[in-house]
Amino acid sequence: NTIDAIVRNNSIITTTTSTQYEGIHLATSVGAEISGNKIVAETGAEYGMFIENCVNLVSGPTNIFNNFIVCAGQFFLAGIEINKSAYVNAYHNTVNIYSPTQGSYCLEIAGTGSSNVEILNNIFTNNGIGYAFNVSPSPIGSVSAFDYNDLYTVVGGAIGIYNNDTIADVLDLQTVHSVGLNSVSADPQYISSTDLHSGSAGVNDLGIPLVSVVDDIDGELRSGSSPDLGA
Picture (tube, rainbow, N blue to C red):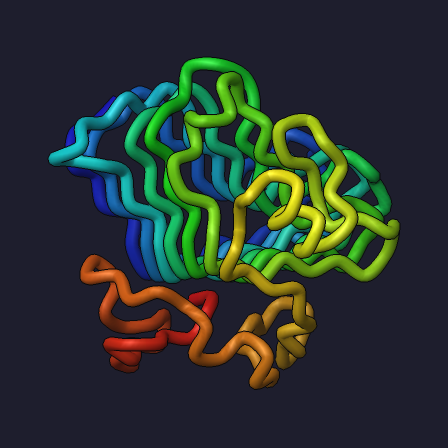
C-alpha cells in the first residue's frame, strides 16, 4: 500500500517448493516502478510477479520493465499476473516458464476491474506444456496495447489464450483478433534456463521505441528506432 514505490535491481532467487510463492507482490499501490530485477523460482512458484488492485493514474502508472523472470514447478503459475489494476505498463521484460501444468502462462491478465494495461516489447517463452499468455480480462478492451512481443511455446500446438479464445499461432492472433500485428513467435535461444540473455537474431530490432525505457537490463543504451525485444 504505497505511492511511487521503486523495486529495482534485485536478485530474488528461491529453491522453495511452495505452490504459493510470489517473487514480487504489489498490491493497492500507485505509481510504482519495478525494473532490473532477476526473479528465479525453478522448484516452485505461483507468480513471479503479482500486481493486484493497483488503480493508478495516467500521470502515474505502474511501470514494469527490464526484468528477467524464471518460474517452474508442479502447479498453475504465471510469470507476470495483472489483476484489477489500471494504467499498468509491462515493457521489455523477459519471462521463461517451464512447468508440466497446462494452466501456466508467462503473462496472465484475467477477471474484471483492470483498464489501460499496455504489454509491449516483451519476450514470453513457455518451455513447458502451458501457454505464453492468457489475456482475457473482462472487457478485453482493458488491455489497450498488446503488441511487439515474442510469443513462443514449444509444446501443445497453441501459443496462448486471448479473450478466452485459444490462439494457435501469431497469425491466428493477428487475423482473428486484429491484435499483435507486430508480434512474432521465435525461439530467443537463451544462454541458459535462468540466464535470459538472448542469442537469437529473431528477436533483435523488432520493438517499438519507448521513451520510458531507453536502456536494457545491463544498462546498455537501446536503439532509438528499433530496440531489441525483451529485457
